[in-house]
Image (cartoon, rainbow, N blue to C red; front, side, top):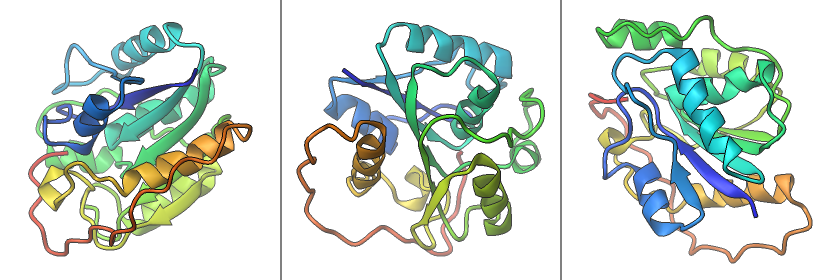
Length: 203
């Protein structure tokens, strides 16, 4: 059985964040917790993800923001248990360091081709990564990109709580990772959340 590992970004995900909603709603989902959410060190975050992966037979990663860069760092690490990755609103390290005072020791931008199926979900007005940077990362990772309009950082501050529409993207990734699985039940169609001009105080 494939486990869903939810990987928050800088400062973690609050209880209202869609990642926490998904964790509460899915008994097969686990949040990869970190000892230090505020001043992240790549090696420490990798160790926590390694521990979570070791407890699974295989996992889908569902990462947000800085968590996407953690997932992308596994292009250079053993990644056999990673069956796919949903990368939502990846961030630029330069933007993180500019917008947040704490030192982020995450090395260089991970831009190697990813060895597992992956889908990037991006926004047209994300303060943490321009659309040009997003397209560069997607090309380097050999990813598939879906943009959902003016959606800020696709977090609580830009109006994304439970985000049921995001599960459609996870279903699409699951079909690519495990094509023998039966087709998932379709969720009711609703309009994707797009908020222009929102204030973004958290990543």
